[in-house]
Length: 439
Image (cartoon, rainbow, N blue to C red):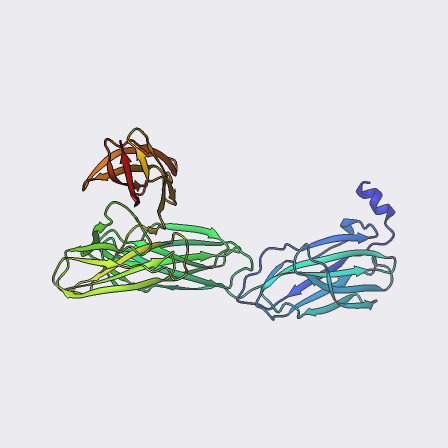
């Protein structure tokens, strides 16, 4: 059916004007997005006018006034006006008030937008013939976009230090995607952003790394889905040539330790002015930084500290991030962190024949099974006779289970053992009691 046919078959037509006013001077009103829909009797779309309509931003609890004007030459008889709302396009309509009137205009003040949410305000107008059209406009109830940008780092830093910041956003368009940009001013000149993120999250940390000597002012820009924007800055940070670093580590060959194993770290400094204060921290599973200990007022440019990590929640294979903060006599602090150190409950089970007495012509079969760890695995099988230990066989395999059969060179009383090293250089060993070999 075309529009001309539709108009001829229409039982009744009307036009209405719906106007909403908020009086929210501080919040922007976007271009009109309100719509009209026909329900019930079929209406000619062109017979209905709808303005100014739009999408409104208000603060929670603020009222919105709707004004409806009816063209009485097109709407037949007394009209029924039903005012209500939905919290989404998929939500059911909630009726607030129904009024029957022959007046040309009618007003209603919405006071239901009490919470932070998206609302769809609806006005249903029906004339005496049953011809109906709905009018809608959207209301985004939210608090103004705001944010707090913080740091606990000192204002005097050594070069290449890690400078942790945190942005906590409040308000902004409800269920909006927020656009974050982190950057800084260097010696008074704004630099290109160093990082960005688009997501619905409102709580983020970001760590800067200042690689040049000079003065920095960190900032973050946050924009919501309607281009409301805030910019937050931190106080000036002065970066000098003083620098601390992690040196020799033990275990030196790996970033993995066993439960309860100590982790020994060496810290050294370059530049700056003695004496130095070394403070040692670590993150537990990426959570809040924990203080471990410190070495105060030493003239030494190098110190050694032993970490004893704790796993209070009993997580399987937790990880820790060691952090050092070294402050010199000038009050400049250098902050550095290591790669994550994983605590792995790395174990092996070493099993063998039930018989502990065999003949020299026989073999002694063993089975080694690894728990956790990372491939590849290096299995080293030893035997000890008359106080002398001999490496019998080395096997490298991707498998966590390995079978090896000893062939002893002579009669005697032997002790057999195995050592296994995984791909992370984690080491474990086990042994079986004495084996008697006879001719």
